[in-house]
Length: 229
Image 1 (cartoon, helix red, strand yellow):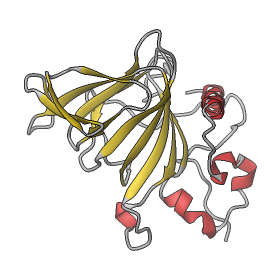
Image 2 (spheres, rainbow, N blue to C red; image 1 turned 90 degrees about the vertical axis):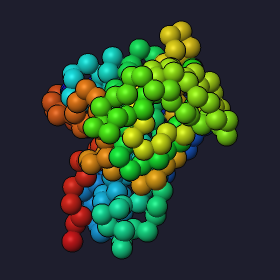
Image 3 (cartoon, rainbow, N blue to C red; image 1 turned 120 degrees about the vertical axis):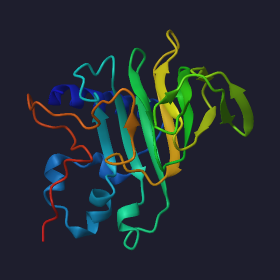
Image 4 (cartoon, one colour; image 1 turned 60 degrees about the horizontal axis):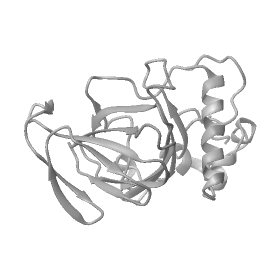
């Protein structure tokens, strides 16, 4: 993915957040130069991968398969003695025409909330014991406190304000209902680990290889330099 694409995606998400008056924590505004001065007092941000995250899933077509995200808070199961939080919060931004591929989480339970914009479509499947997609059995879902059972592969429509609870090992993908407009999404979950807790079907990458065609506007959450001693 080109750095210019990443910079453009960052600014597009900032514009969406400004539209909906969602204020970001200070670390989301740090420049690459700012990060060069940050010491060990910022280790929680580094260790728990807080901040910006832009991905094209390694497929090289961000406008069709891609997502913009910010991790606002997170714990760390591998370092629970240091970071006691058992929860995480993200913002996600998906533009009309984009798609986030089918996946599940082995450990994380999450609520996905339409915070504003168009209609979010989430397709759901159960998983089989071998972790493949169960394309036959009905799926029980929880939408804002209401339990529903739907056929495998149903696309659920989340209009602004609506949410769904995603259980571990429940396959799900994201896209926007055509003609409804870009969507700002909230995610409230257990601790998040994008390095070890995503199973994509079919397999894709998670963090993009970057072609440096211009300077970075912000650093992504997997790009922070080590702390200055």
